[in-house]
Image (tube, rainbow, N blue to C red; front, side, top):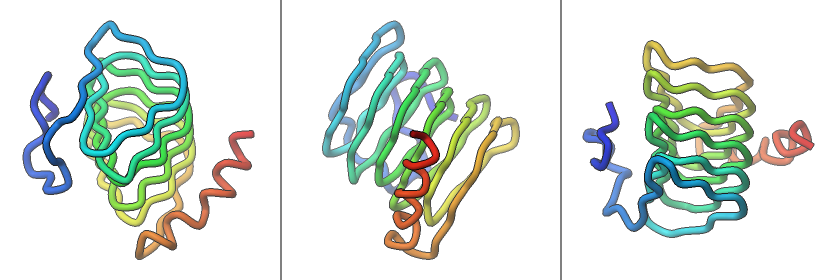
Length: 136
C-alpha cells in the first residue's frame, strides 16, 4: 500500500520525490513537472509529466492526466494517458478512459471505464485523440 509520505516500495519507476500536495490542499489548473510528485489533496484540471505521479488514498483528482507512470490508491475521474505503466491500488477508484502499455489492478480497486493498451509507448499514446474526443 502507499504510505502517507513514503514512495511505494517495489516500483523502480519511482524516483526522489520533488513535490508533495498534502491532505486538505486544493489545486485547480494545469500542473507540469519533472520527477516524482505525490498528491493527497484535491486536484481539478490537467497533469502533464513524463515521470511519476503518485495519488494517495485521500486524494481526489478530476481531469486529464498525461503521465509516464501513475500509482494511485485515491479517487480519479477523467482520462489518463500513461506512456509507461499504471498501478491501481485498493481502496482507490477510477472512472473514465485510460491508454497505457501496462496496467496492474489490485483486488479491491474500483475500475469503471475503458482501457486501451499497446505493446509500447507509441501504441499506448495513439488512442489519446480518441480518449480526448470522448471527454469533450
